[in-house]
Image (tube, rainbow, N blue to C red; front, side):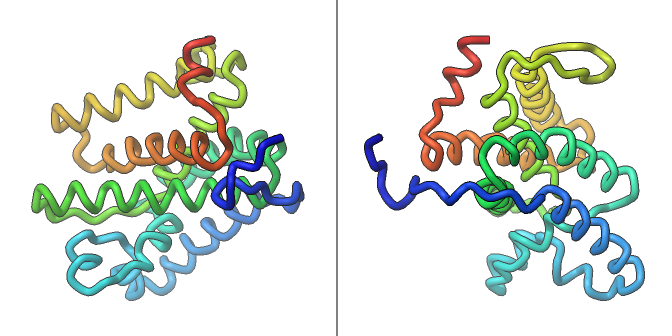
Length: 209
């Protein structure tokens, strides 16, 4: 097999339940924040603060914060359902890198667009990373039938619907309390990761559906 270079050099395949660890840490942080709310402001992703003060850690810390129990449960449920099989397929180290890369790039994508529009936004939640993981699941299992909104459909169809809704809500200004740009950024980050890091053409999986 041809070596694609350092960027795509594979990690040794290992299994150490990264999905479970991510869920456990995220849930622990949620309850820790309830006990110590004073630390939230420094951890939430605020594009203006990141640009002005160089608070680059916010691109990671925002992933582990959530605005409520429903927000937390939904994200962690999606991470468990779609992250676990992706982790089994590509290995824990690769999966952890995928998750964090999608989260950071989704946050960076949202930050750039927020700064360009001068919109005063605050972003928190694992949704960007989870959307990237869901794209990876669909690309790796394009014909897998999943139940989404109680309707059986292919995994690729589910991702297309989620992407279309995020774009629609962003353009129309609906559900402004949701970070639609971060969702779109997560999908874009997942696409880039799969293409550059794993050498997989995501469009091919959707064309074959």
